[in-house]
Amino acid sequence: MSDTQPPRAVAAVLFDGFELLDVFGPLELFGVLHDQFSISLIGPAAGAVRSARGPAAVAEAAYEDAPDPDIVLVPGGIGTRALVGDRSFLGWLARWAGQAPVVASVCTGSAVLASAGLLDGYRATSNKRAFAWVRGTGPEVEWVAQARWVEDRDRWTSSGVAAGMDMTLALIARLHSEAVASMVADRTELEWHRDADWDPFAVLNGLVDT
Amino acid sequence: MSDTQPPRAVAAVLFDGFELLDVFGPLELFGVLHDQFSISLIGPAAGAVRSARGPAAVAEAAYEDAPDPDIVLVPGGIGTRALVGDRSFLGWLARWAGQAPVVASVCTGSAVLASAGLLDGYRATSNKRAFAWVRGTGPEVEWVAQARWVEDRDRWTSSGVAAGMDMTLALIARLHSEAVASMVADRTELEWHRDADWDPFAVLNGLVDT
Figure 1: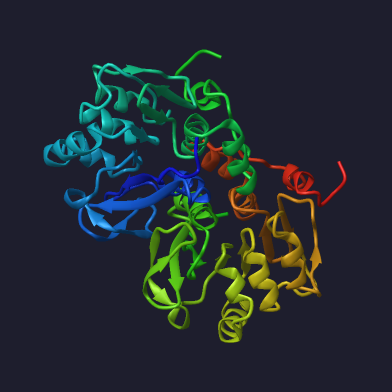
Figure 2: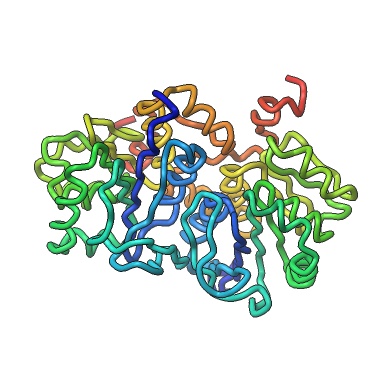
C-alpha cells in the first residue's frame, strides 16, 4: 500500500457512558500511524462527552455534522443500554456508518451496530459478560461466542474492552501489512494476540465448554 | 482492606501532547473499582487538553487548583520533551505530588518525575525506545532497563504505553489483593502480565543481551 495515499479517516462515536479503553486503546494504535490514519471523535454535540468511568473526552463534531468516515469505531460501555433503544440515533448511525468501507465495534458496541441493523447477516462477537444481552439485540446476526474478534467482510467486532486493541492491530495488518501492525505493537509495548480464536474469557464466563 | 474506606483519589496529570493509552489504560482499570478509586484529570487549565494522537480530554481542574491526591499518575508522550525543561511546572509537581502516598508514571512520564527530583534515590524504568533520553533526565535515579514496571516504595514506574496497565493491576493488587486485580483484568478481558520482569521490549530495543 502506497504511503502517498491520503490518510484514512477514523471516526470514533462517543456517547454518554462510553467505555474509555474501548475508544482510546484502538485510537492509540491508529494514532501511531499518523500518516496513514486521521482520527476524530464525534458525539451528540461538539464538546465534552462523559465516559462510563468519569473522565470526559472532546467530540470535535456532532453526529449530524460528521464527515463521511473510512473507518467507524463504536465503543461499548454502560451507555449502550440506552442507545439500543434510541431510534433517532440508530437511524443516523445506519445511514452514516452504512456507507463506510469499514465498520468496527469494541465490546458492547456490537449491540449498537446490531440494533442499527448494521450486522444483519454478519458474523460478530462482543463482551463475554454481556453476551446474552447483546445476542438479544441482533436476532439476524450470527453471534460467535468464542472469539477475540470477528472479521466478516467490512464488519469488525471485538470482544470486551482490551480486545479492541488486538482487533485494531489485525485491521491495520489487513489494510497495510503484518509488519506494520507488529511495528505498532512494538512501539506501544503491547503484546499482540494475533489469533482471533484466542479467547479465554469465553471459557471464564461459561459461554463455551473447556 | 475494608470496603468502607473512602475511595482513593487518583489524579492523572494531563499536558499538551500526552499519550492517550498511558492515561486511559490505567484509568479504565481503576475505574472498574469505582467504589475504591475516584478519578480526576488535571491540566494546565481546566478544559480541553490535546493528546499526542490528536483527541483531547477534559481536565476538571488546573494544576494549581488540584486537590491533594492519593495516587498521582503521570503519563508519557511527546509533550514530556518540553515538560522536563519547564521549571515552573516541575516545581509545582514536586510540591503537589511529593506528599502523595503513591506516585506513578507510565512510559516517558518517568522522565518528568525524574526531572522534578521525585525519583532521586529510587529504582525506576521507562519506555524502551526512549530509554537513553530518559536516563539523562535523572542522574540520581537507578534506572532499570529490563522491567515491565518497577515498584520501589511509594514510586511506581512502568515501561512504555501498554505497560501502564500491567503496573496498574499490580498496584491494585498491592492496595487491595491479587484476587481483586484479577477480577479487574477479567472484566476488561485483559491478559495481565503479573511478572514485573517480563519485558521483551528491552531485548527488542537492544537494552539488554538476549
